[in-house]
Image (tube, rainbow over the protein chains, first blue to last red):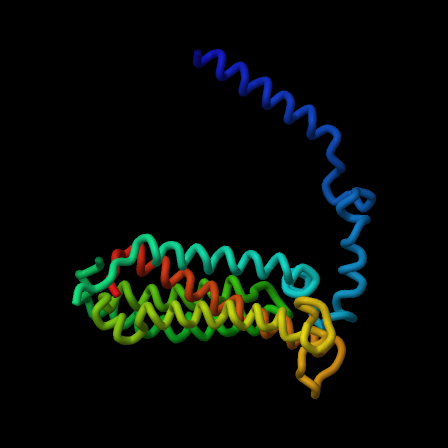
Length: 91
Length: 145
């Protein structure tokens, strides 16, 4: 059974290695990730938001809805910890 | 519950010296998120770390008098409320959801107003993360309230 699992893992590794051949090169300017929306952010973020840090501009302004969800997830995790684990004081 | 607080004067002195600087650095990280690495999440974690350090070296009895868990819950909820209001208030002034260009701060305009909106949102994120992490620590430490 162990050898069977190892064989499956090797096949999976081979599949992944085969798939990486088709990925675009690292920092390729013609790759889809670098041609779609990134140039707009890089060119316009200072003009639009007056924020030199593009990461902050994308995180809080262009993708603010995503950040709202993230913050809500973290705060809900804190609330869930309190509701499940904290006990009331006996009075 | 952490009953044993540290009697060592070295630990107490170093911690009480370190905590204000951690909090100052946390504020710097939140406010300076426009210009450098950082932002609400990182600054909130640093603020939470300062409070957790206080809990560790003072023991929960005194530390809960200095900063009760209910205050952490309230601050986290206030941060979440700030973020949601920064989304909803522009809708009342003719913008889209989270459209900081329409926030009712009439003395700033255009891109500056969007930068102010980002700052407001970062403060909200910082408070929410701070409250959540302190609450997680308190509940995992088995506190009662």
